[in-house]
Every structure is written in structure tokens, then in C-alpha cells.
Length: 142
Image 1 (tube, helix red, strand yellow):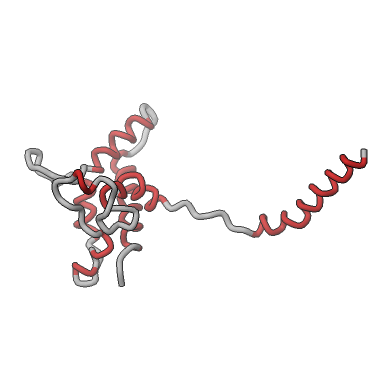
Image 2 (image 1 turned 90 degrees about the horizontal axis):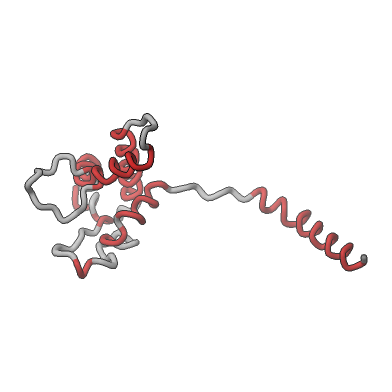
């Protein structure tokens, strides 16, 4: 009986001492843009976005350093241009392109996920691309 009582006392002490500290910690913010980047961009552009991903040696053309986009554009992050590149909606149908067309991929994944549930595929795609662009804008060198 003493062992059980000691065990319960130890657990109670831990809850009393550690509980308030755990309650005060803020949960980490879910970063949708980073999640998109890690899932769809890092293999080519690298986790640091400098164009040093794991599959670079298999690509015909080296991916650009995404941390320099604003610097190379007069200090302005080229949001509209990047949106078009990622979405791929304005790519000629018979042209070649090294980067995947993520807009089409996002729409296909949304259709597979939502199936017959009503949803707006354009809004779904736009939200994912904008989250990704917001993350990439935070990576820009000053």
C-alpha cells in the first residue's frame, strides 16, 4: 500500500508542479506555407530554398535560389509572377516546363479529397498557392 501511495503522491506532485507550466506554453502555430514548401518545393529548391534540393542532380536545369527573388526584382517580392509560375494556368499547352504545374495538381488532389462534397476548386488552389508564397516571401534576404 505504501508503494502505491508514494507513486500517486509523486504523480500528483508532477501534475501540480509541471501542469501550470504546460498550460502556459502556447501551441505552435501551424505554418501552412512551410508545409506546402516542404511537401512540394524542398526536393528541388532545398529546405533552405537556395536551389540545393536532393533531386538537383537529376534535373535538366538548376532550380533558382528562392531567397533572392525580391533582391533580383528591385527589392519587391514578385507575387503575381510567382503565382502564375506556381499555378501554371498560363503555360502554353505544347510548351515545355521544368517545374510541375502545382495548380493542376492541387485541383486534382482537392477533387480526390472532397469528391462529391461541394467546394470551390479555384479558392482551394488559390489558398494553397498564397500560403506558399507568403512563406517564400518570409525567406527573402534583406
